[in-house]
Image: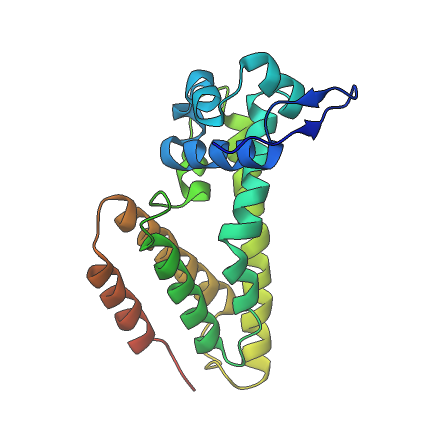
Length: 203
Protein backbone atom coordinates (compact mmCIF):
# COMPACT_ATOMS: atom_id res chain seq x y z
CA UNK A 1 0.00 0.00 0.00
CA UNK A 2 1.25 3.42 -0.93
CA UNK A 3 2.47 5.26 2.15
CA UNK A 4 1.84 8.91 2.84
CA UNK A 5 2.62 11.09 5.80
CA UNK A 6 -0.38 12.78 7.36
CA UNK A 7 0.12 15.04 10.37
CA UNK A 8 -1.37 13.79 13.63
CA UNK A 9 -3.12 15.84 16.26
CA UNK A 10 0.07 16.11 18.30
CA UNK A 11 2.08 17.31 15.33
CA UNK A 12 3.95 14.04 14.79
CA UNK A 13 3.77 12.48 11.32
CA UNK A 14 1.76 9.31 10.87
CA UNK A 15 3.37 6.62 8.76
CA UNK A 16 0.19 5.96 6.85
CA UNK A 17 -2.45 7.91 4.93
CA UNK A 18 -5.70 8.26 6.84
CA UNK A 19 -7.78 8.34 3.64
CA UNK A 20 -6.25 5.11 2.32
CA UNK A 21 -6.63 3.41 5.69
CA UNK A 22 -10.29 4.44 5.86
CA UNK A 23 -10.92 3.12 2.34
CA UNK A 24 -9.39 -0.21 3.39
CA UNK A 25 -11.58 -0.31 6.52
CA UNK A 26 -14.65 0.35 4.39
CA UNK A 27 -13.91 -2.71 2.27
CA UNK A 28 -13.64 -4.87 5.38
CA UNK A 29 -16.92 -3.62 6.83
CA UNK A 30 -18.57 -3.94 3.42
CA UNK A 31 -17.40 -7.54 3.06
CA UNK A 32 -18.03 -8.75 6.62
CA UNK A 33 -20.49 -6.32 8.17
CA UNK A 34 -19.94 -4.47 11.42
CA UNK A 35 -20.11 -7.49 13.71
CA UNK A 36 -18.15 -9.75 11.39
CA UNK A 37 -15.22 -7.36 11.08
CA UNK A 38 -12.72 -7.93 13.89
CA UNK A 39 -10.13 -5.40 14.95
CA UNK A 40 -7.48 -7.75 13.59
CA UNK A 41 -9.25 -7.83 10.21
CA UNK A 42 -9.35 -4.05 10.21
CA UNK A 43 -5.77 -3.36 11.30
CA UNK A 44 -4.39 -5.97 8.89
CA UNK A 45 -6.28 -4.45 5.95
CA UNK A 46 -5.41 -0.89 6.97
CA UNK A 47 -1.75 -1.75 7.56
CA UNK A 48 -1.69 -0.12 10.98
CA UNK A 49 -1.55 -1.12 14.64
CA UNK A 50 -4.43 -0.95 17.08
CA UNK A 51 -2.97 2.08 18.90
CA UNK A 52 -2.72 3.86 15.54
CA UNK A 53 -6.32 2.97 14.74
CA UNK A 54 -7.54 4.35 18.06
CA UNK A 55 -5.42 7.49 17.72
CA UNK A 56 -6.60 8.26 14.18
CA UNK A 57 -10.21 7.10 14.22
CA UNK A 58 -11.30 6.41 17.80
CA UNK A 59 -12.90 3.03 18.53
CA UNK A 60 -14.39 0.50 16.12
CA UNK A 61 -17.80 2.16 16.20
CA UNK A 62 -16.34 5.57 15.34
CA UNK A 63 -14.33 3.99 12.53
CA UNK A 64 -17.46 2.37 11.11
CA UNK A 65 -19.34 5.68 11.13
CA UNK A 66 -16.51 7.31 9.19
CA UNK A 67 -16.48 4.38 6.77
CA UNK A 68 -20.24 4.69 6.34
CA UNK A 69 -19.84 8.39 5.56
CA UNK A 70 -17.30 7.50 2.88
CA UNK A 71 -19.57 4.76 1.49
CA UNK A 72 -22.54 7.10 1.16
CA UNK A 73 -20.43 9.92 -0.25
CA UNK A 74 -18.65 7.85 -2.91
CA UNK A 75 -20.56 4.62 -3.52
CA UNK A 76 -24.13 5.89 -3.12
CA UNK A 77 -23.69 9.24 -4.86
CA UNK A 78 -26.00 8.01 -7.63
CA UNK A 79 -28.91 7.92 -5.18
CA UNK A 80 -28.99 11.67 -4.61
CA UNK A 81 -28.39 12.31 -8.32
CA UNK A 82 -31.33 10.06 -9.21
CA UNK A 83 -33.78 12.44 -7.52
CA UNK A 84 -33.02 15.02 -10.22
CA UNK A 85 -34.48 12.82 -12.96
CA UNK A 86 -37.41 14.55 -14.72
CA UNK A 87 -39.89 11.69 -14.13
CA UNK A 88 -40.65 9.20 -11.36
CA UNK A 89 -39.77 6.35 -13.70
CA UNK A 90 -36.52 8.13 -14.46
CA UNK A 91 -35.77 8.28 -10.75
CA UNK A 92 -36.38 4.54 -10.47
CA UNK A 93 -34.27 3.80 -13.54
CA UNK A 94 -31.32 5.84 -12.28
CA UNK A 95 -31.49 4.14 -8.88
CA UNK A 96 -31.72 0.65 -10.33
CA UNK A 97 -29.00 1.17 -12.92
CA UNK A 98 -26.77 2.86 -10.36
CA UNK A 99 -27.18 -0.14 -8.09
CA UNK A 100 -26.48 -2.46 -11.03
CA UNK A 101 -23.28 -0.62 -11.87
CA UNK A 102 -22.04 -0.87 -8.31
CA UNK A 103 -23.04 -4.49 -7.74
CA UNK A 104 -21.66 -5.67 -11.08
CA UNK A 105 -18.24 -4.14 -10.41
CA UNK A 106 -15.37 -6.59 -10.05
CA UNK A 107 -13.52 -4.07 -7.89
CA UNK A 108 -15.97 -3.78 -5.00
CA UNK A 109 -17.54 -6.18 -2.48
CA UNK A 110 -21.06 -7.35 -3.29
CA UNK A 111 -24.18 -6.43 -1.38
CA UNK A 112 -25.02 -3.19 0.39
CA UNK A 113 -23.17 -2.03 3.49
CA UNK A 114 -26.31 -0.43 4.91
CA UNK A 115 -28.35 -3.61 4.40
CA UNK A 116 -25.62 -5.85 5.83
CA UNK A 117 -25.20 -3.70 8.91
CA UNK A 118 -28.91 -3.07 9.51
CA UNK A 119 -29.42 -6.75 10.35
CA UNK A 120 -26.70 -6.74 13.02
CA UNK A 121 -28.26 -8.09 16.20
CA UNK A 122 -25.60 -8.16 18.92
CA UNK A 123 -25.70 -5.79 21.88
CA UNK A 124 -22.47 -4.16 20.71
CA UNK A 125 -23.96 -3.43 17.30
CA UNK A 126 -27.32 -2.03 18.43
CA UNK A 127 -26.24 1.62 18.15
CA UNK A 128 -24.76 0.90 14.71
CA UNK A 129 -27.98 -0.75 13.58
CA UNK A 130 -29.97 2.27 14.79
CA UNK A 131 -27.61 4.63 12.97
CA UNK A 132 -27.91 2.72 9.70
CA UNK A 133 -31.71 2.57 9.94
CA UNK A 134 -31.86 6.31 10.64
CA UNK A 135 -29.75 7.10 7.59
CA UNK A 136 -31.79 4.78 5.42
CA UNK A 137 -34.98 6.49 6.64
CA UNK A 138 -33.55 9.84 5.62
CA UNK A 139 -33.01 8.51 2.09
CA UNK A 140 -36.54 7.09 2.07
CA UNK A 141 -38.03 10.42 3.15
CA UNK A 142 -36.28 12.18 0.27
CA UNK A 143 -37.66 9.60 -2.16
CA UNK A 144 -41.21 10.01 -0.79
CA UNK A 145 -41.01 13.77 -1.29
CA UNK A 146 -39.83 13.27 -4.87
CA UNK A 147 -42.75 10.93 -5.61
CA UNK A 148 -45.20 13.31 -3.96
CA UNK A 149 -43.97 15.94 -6.40
CA UNK A 150 -44.42 13.45 -9.24
CA UNK A 151 -48.04 12.93 -8.19
CA UNK A 152 -48.66 16.67 -8.03
CA UNK A 153 -47.24 16.97 -11.56
CA UNK A 154 -49.46 14.16 -12.82
CA UNK A 155 -46.48 11.88 -13.38
CA UNK A 156 -47.76 9.12 -11.06
CA UNK A 157 -51.32 7.75 -10.95
CA UNK A 158 -53.41 9.29 -8.18
CA UNK A 159 -54.26 5.79 -6.97
CA UNK A 160 -50.61 5.12 -6.15
CA UNK A 161 -49.20 6.10 -2.77
CA UNK A 162 -45.94 8.04 -2.76
CA UNK A 163 -44.96 6.23 0.45
CA UNK A 164 -45.90 2.90 -1.09
CA UNK A 165 -43.91 3.52 -4.26
CA UNK A 166 -40.87 4.63 -2.26
CA UNK A 167 -41.13 1.53 -0.09
CA UNK A 168 -41.58 -0.68 -3.14
CA UNK A 169 -38.46 0.75 -4.79
CA UNK A 170 -36.46 0.47 -1.55
CA UNK A 171 -37.49 -3.20 -1.31
CA UNK A 172 -36.35 -3.75 -4.90
CA UNK A 173 -32.98 -2.17 -4.18
CA UNK A 174 -32.49 -4.17 -0.98
CA UNK A 175 -33.44 -7.40 -2.73
CA UNK A 176 -31.14 -6.43 -5.57
CA UNK A 177 -28.16 -6.07 -3.24
CA UNK A 178 -28.98 -9.31 -1.42
CA UNK A 179 -29.12 -11.24 -4.69
CA UNK A 180 -25.85 -9.69 -5.80
CA UNK A 181 -24.31 -10.69 -2.48
CA UNK A 182 -25.59 -14.24 -3.03
CA UNK A 183 -23.75 -14.45 -6.35
CA UNK A 184 -26.29 -13.35 -8.98
CA UNK A 185 -24.66 -12.65 -12.35
CA UNK A 186 -24.74 -9.31 -14.12
CA UNK A 187 -27.17 -10.76 -16.66
CA UNK A 188 -29.55 -11.84 -13.89
CA UNK A 189 -29.37 -8.41 -12.26
CA UNK A 190 -29.98 -6.70 -15.60
CA UNK A 191 -33.14 -8.77 -16.06
CA UNK A 192 -34.34 -7.60 -12.66
CA UNK A 193 -33.78 -3.98 -13.68
CA UNK A 194 -35.60 -4.38 -16.99
CA UNK A 195 -38.53 -6.24 -15.41
CA UNK A 196 -38.88 -3.66 -12.64
CA UNK A 197 -38.95 -0.82 -15.15
CA UNK A 198 -41.40 -2.65 -17.42
CA UNK A 199 -44.01 -2.85 -14.64
CA UNK A 200 -43.44 0.69 -13.34
CA UNK A 201 -46.81 2.49 -13.17
CA UNK A 202 -47.37 5.42 -15.49
CA UNK A 203 -50.32 7.76 -15.74
